[in-house]
Length: 136
Image (cartoon, rainbow, N blue to C red; front, side, top):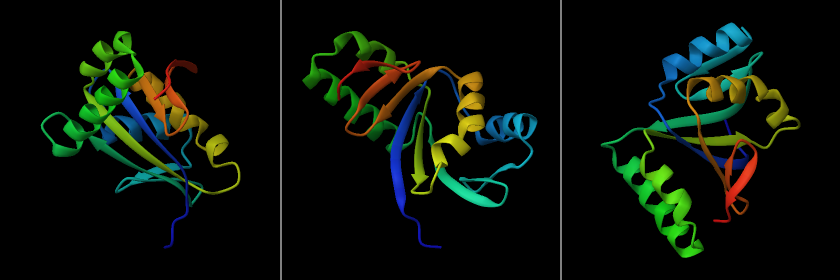
C-alpha cells in the first residue's frame, strides 16, 4: 500500500501508554476501529499509523532530546519540565485522506482518557488541551 502522509504528530504522554489500552478503549468507543500492528483503521479504511516509544528506547530518547533542544531555543523553559516527565511518545502519521482527522475523533478521545499529554504538530507548535504552550 502506498501511503501519502497528510500530517505527522507526536504526543508526549504524561503516563505510560500501550497499544492494548488504546485498542480496548477504541473498541468500547466505536467497534469499527481497529489497531493492527500500529495501523489505525475505521470501518476497514486505514487512517493512520502509530508507533509508541517508551523510556529506554533510542527513539524515545531522540524524541525527548530533540523536543527539549527546540524548547530551549524557543525560550520555553516552563514547558521543559513537563516534557522531561514524559512516559511515552506516540508518533502518529495521519494519511492524506478527506476527513481523516474527523474520522479519528474517537482515537483522540480515547488517548486523552488513557493519558494526559502535550501534542506537537510540525510547524505549528506544542499544544496542551488545544492551547498552544510553545512555538517549536
